[in-house]
Amino acid sequence: MEAVQNNEAAPRKRVFSAIKPTGNPTLGNYVGAMKYWGGMADEYDCLYAVADLHAITVNIEPKELRENSKRLFALLIAIGIDPDRNVLFMQSHVSAHAELGWLLNNYTMFGEARRMTQFKEKSKKAPDNINVGLFDYPVLMAADILLYQADIVPVGDDQMQHVELCRTIAQRFNNKYSPTFKMPEGRVPKSGARIYSLADPTAKMGKSDGDGSGSVFILDKPEDIMRKFKRAVTDCDSKIKASKDKPGITNLLNIYASLCGITVAAAEKEFENSDYAAFKTRVGEAAAETLRPIREKYEALRRDDVALAELMKAGAERASRIAHRTLEKVYKKIGFVRV
Ligand code: TRP
Image (cartoon, rainbow, N blue to C red; front, top):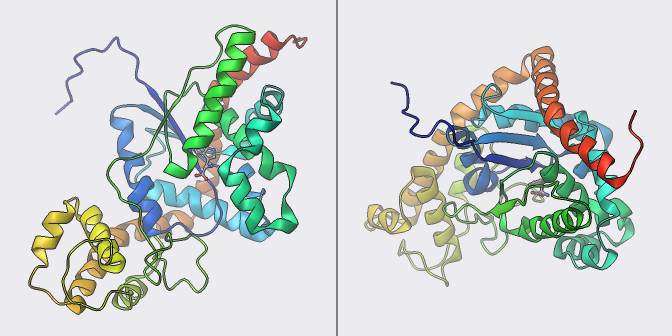
């Protein structure tokens, strides 16, 4: 049955988000963010980009960038972003991103960019590669968002500071010229707890975790998923209860609750008479069951590179049309001669 639209005149709000093709997306990325993206098209006009331009702010080999980019694009479709109902594209295929990024540099203060927590952390991590791109990263991110006049920007909590900077830049530009950019609002998903490493439940489940034993990757095979869960670090008593001093069990409960769409309390109840081994097996099975159809869809998409390229092209064309309208306005307002 068709959904009844009770206010067809109201324009739909626009959502924009992007994800970098660095590392290998994990169950944590899925549960914490990606899982919600496909469904947002019911309510909003959604644009999603693979942020490949952002990926080169850290050291990355050409082969890796190329493979990661294709993998992520296909994976986004596999997790439920239907390219007919959403605009899905590669950031570098829409030249307006790099152009607006340059323009916005001139409305961003050095001191504002210098204060960004992510810049400080990444500089500490790679002191031999503190490049200007890394510093400029949030300005390009502001360009991504502002080009599409996005209302809502779903992000992880570590990106909220960048969305705030984006608003500062937009406000400054709007004040100097005239209203040009919509003020975007960053949104951190309420449900979908932060997922920690299975090997060290005090550290975030990372996309580029050392030997991979602590991270479950979305594209892992069921047997690897099971092995990782069975070896998950837990604590020494045997109660399956979430608490501060039981980070391992709490993490597994969070994962299970998110995968099954239930509360942590309901998960605790379900396992009140289980031992750790049975619990870990069940969480592993839930993860493997959730991820299996995603991996199968992904593999089908990767069997046809030509079709994948066509989807990229179509997405970039649709994104370009919107982006260039904003970019043209910006050039004119600043005073560039347009012919
Ligand atoms: N910086 C974001 C991250 O690391 C990815 C990103 C790039 C992004 N451009 C964006 C997110 C624009 C939201 C909007 O997760």
